[in-house]
Length: 123
Image 1 (cartoon, rainbow, N blue to C red):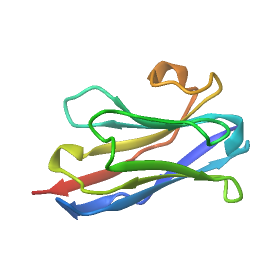
Image 2: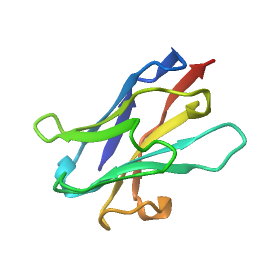
Image 3: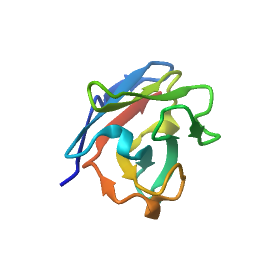
């Protein structure tokens, strides 16, 4: 049973930073492409970033490129999302997800999901 547990969300002022963590249990983090998605109130879930099994390749949504960085620590079986220069429009519940199908931005390609962590950016 693969489980994903996110943490690190909170309230931050615009321009600030947060680092989200996603601890993977049940399988090694290198078994999957690991992605971050987010869902704001009244909106559909959207792709944020993904890192390949090897950790060599990453892909970002245009809205977060150059501000967010996805990474992973295989020794800790953890994936991170470093978020800098946060904007009010980044406010959402952020979800970690695992895909056995390789690097992808399509949410239905992800078989495992965490419970989400709330990020709120005040103006």
